[in-house]
Amino acid sequence: MRLRNDKPEAGNQPATDLIFGEWYPAVRTSELRPGSMTTTLLLGIPLVVGRKRDGALFAMRDLCPHRGIPLSAGWFDGDTVQCRYHGWKFEPCSGQCTEIPSLTQIDTLQPTKIYAGAFPCREADGFAWVYVPEAGMGRITAETALPPLPQVPKFSAQFRTAHLSADLPCNVDHGIIGLMDPAHGPFVHRAWWWRSAASIHEKTKRFEPLPDGFRMSSHAPSANSAPYKLLGVYGEKIETTIDFTLPNRRYEVIRAGHGENGKWFASLTTITPVTPSSCRIDVVACWNVFYNVPLVPQIAKFFGARFVRQDQETMIQQAEGLRFRPAMMLIDDADKPAKWYFALKQRRLTGQGEHPLREPVELHWRS
Ligand code: FES
Ligand SMILES: [Fe+2]
Image 1 (cartoon, rainbow, N blue to C red):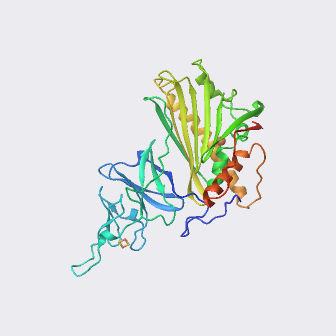
Image 2: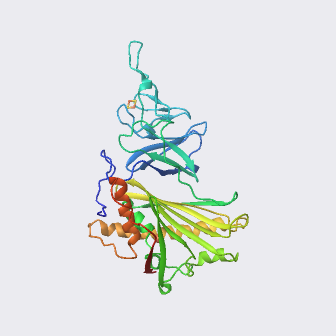
Image 3: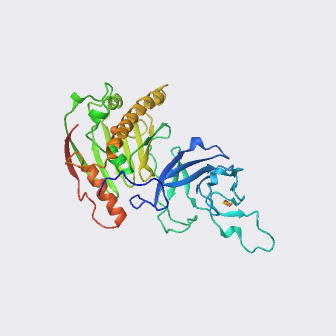
């Protein structure tokens, strides 16, 4: 598969190398008070996302089915979205048209047979997730079977949560392979509190196949990563797994002990296509370590934000180079996860091919 960065911005043709038929995080629900709406782009589709007065979330294609003006330019009274051009009204969860003000007694047109595009929209982990259907899937109703909503795994009733997001000026593939790239740590994330170039050493990690992805199997976390040392104070054996699953999800789980007193940290990082040539990284992390200690969420967020900014700055610089459409290389073993990602994605898009991992394998690299 070619790594591309030369696709046009959101246009009329659906992008052919994006994965449809999945849930993507659209906006943070903290932005959505009852009766408010906001706009965003997902996979090149303009969306108006909002929350009705009764709390229900909705996501509509931000284009009036009458003449294409953005519905977000109109009015929302908490129940109904009204287009500002000719005043058509829509129930935003179903997209069903409820009123066409210009109709007279003689007109036979039934407004309720008209629908604005509406997408399933649900809340999890502080995000409004939007299901972006495959082309030709038809109108989605309550009966349509949808995949489960992605969520951060949680291992206790009480936990803290923090969020981070950053726009990345590259296509989703570069964002994703950057996310799973084991060799950039000592260079991009060079910092006294994380890693230095001098801390590079050889690593061996075991990977196993997952149905639509792969898992870096339970292992003792990198001993030279300071934040990981924090969990060690509990004296329990620390287990960690990192899963990648299509279309764009990286789950990391770190656990010290199980049961009531177990300590854990878990995160879900997604790279979501905004347009065919740009994407956004969203991180949601939950943990019960230091649950009662003040300032821990702020500190975690401070370091997390720096970490994400380092990735973001690197990708901004990379985008400069990609404008010239250079050829790309993926090397063994450090870029093997990236090769697996492209193979899995190709398999999903074409419905053909084998899982790139038939059985557990070990990869070796220095980082
Ligand atoms: S364009 Fe929306 S009602 Fe006419
Ligand atoms: Fe990184």
